[in-house]
Image (tube, rainbow over all chains, first blue to last red; front, side, top):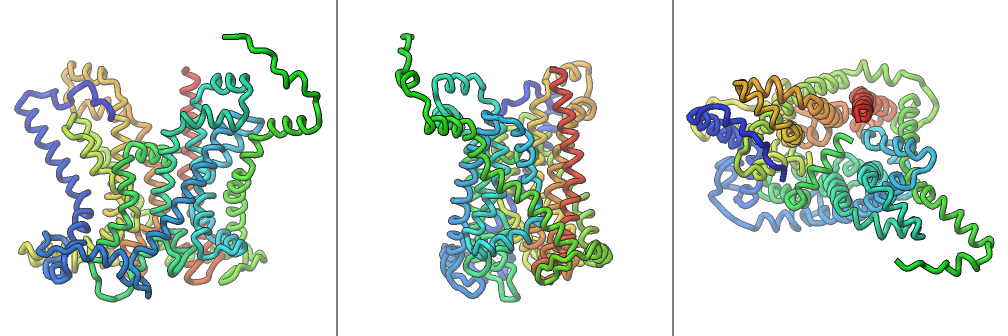
Length: 297
Length: 315
């Protein structure tokens, strides 16, 4: 946690004004906190309320009823687009997309970063620059080519297709993250190891990898949350029972004119949001670091 | 350390082909390892990009047709009423979103920087929207903003029967609900960026100003904010990128509606390509998104490199 600044901005004035300023600060913080927490609080409460209660009192309100039933309905009984198996199959679609895509793109990115940082060759800096261009590419630019390529590879509407897309797209990020981290490993360390006869992979295993946990955590968290939350590719390159959870959620909650079951839908929304939220709660520091690096390059 | 005996293998083994090959291999191993990713990324960036440009110039409609038809799909795009709505919405959304998120983010950062208690808790609360997908955010806010279920309903129940808050279903106002939601999602991140900047300011500078009798608002205006000037640029660039790519948030919140009132370029691209079978025009619209992003990112990259070089020159 960052050390608080060594001055007390509010200390500039007398004690009475100081107290008043403190009051203002905390009031504002609380008001904003309300704005941020409200949506989460509402869905959590609604996932336990029965439908008559919600219909009578509106979505925003304290529960007059309580049941855990809606979570189980949302998980494996609720009907989404014709099949009544709840959100579970889509949840596992997402899992089987996110896990391989994250592991592969992070592993390959780490090795790439290691090459680009520690085994430079003529032109490697230029190649690095070109690779990072992938970071900027808007998804819309690659939709039609991907549709074609997936067709050629026979991966249309499969989880493997989405894994491929996310690996290729994620490579630019993971390579960038790892390369920028590995350049800070002293060259002498690598040189000494080479003099001792260690080769490319041995140096990676024995020297670089043990120094890597911080950047690997950042990269994994970044890839995991991004791929889990991704929607554009998910909705275009998958359909029906193959959809990841983000696409299924839209089908479930925005779908048609049927009467909304807000309690079940709330539970489904929470199930979809839970994995990245858990990652955020337990890896907040690394989450923020990845975000800053990913957004600012 | 004991002197190591000269390793026998290195002396004894006569150079042979297998070994030379292995050594050659060892020297190009890094390149070999990098090659597949490089290949994939370069295809992704250049071939895919060129491919989409080609489609935009071709006769493709429902199916790809690679005969060149020139720029007429661009002309069509720019004379299309939906596209006008899309980019007008984008401009409106982007300006309000950038201003709003920056203002709230900065305010929150300054508030937290007043040595408040439980700082980690406040930060966690303000930042969590970043971990949640746009789909989830949009869905939940749709419920909250919908007049029949959300805020309007609550106020009615509190007794103010004539209260109206139905922006979500008003053509003219729906885009502002996207702004509200977008700001909710991003301002925590802006807060984090500004807070990092505020923490990097030399406390002595502020102390000196305090001793000189400057009031805190004045110190913020004259000393602290100018010192974190570069962070404003970073924040601007991040928010502009988010805004230009906005897609899932609008889909989940309004579905682009009511009618087509909240269509944004990214949605229009999707629509043209996959709903209406107008591939070439969709590709042209995608290229407009790429251009808009470049307008933001190219100057930023140049500015960043210039700053880095200046820092390096200063030592």
